[in-house]
Image (tube, rainbow, N blue to C red; front, top):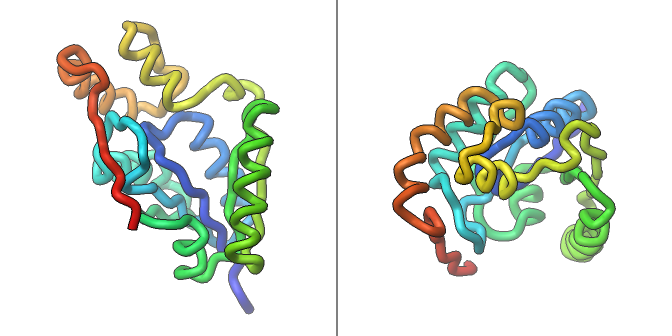
Length: 176
């Protein structure tokens, strides 16, 4: 019998409670879920790829059917390479839908055999994004209800870096 395998891709800089909620709910729908951490996004990052990978693994370590992997290139190419049947995306607000719909259509054009499954975020996380978490934290706000404890500890370890740089870490992505 074929296993239902899905990929939940993202930058996860950092993983927050909304990401964690989507991953755990998606893991209930599929036999295996690969949380795919995009190594070199074309945006400013606070955490390196190995740090993001380690945080996602730590946060989701108790979910037996969730694996965590680093990837580069097109998400659908990664999904095809591991035999996934679906991509999982989270929708927070209506403005997310337009971008996700466009990405789903593009991915379907590139890999028609891979479906996109969108899960609505829990209402308590509808406002939450990694950018918001970082901005609140950098401004001295309390993010303990927004991120899992390992992520909060990792943010604390970056406090000096955050004070000394603006933006904290710049990554240039050279497309393969």
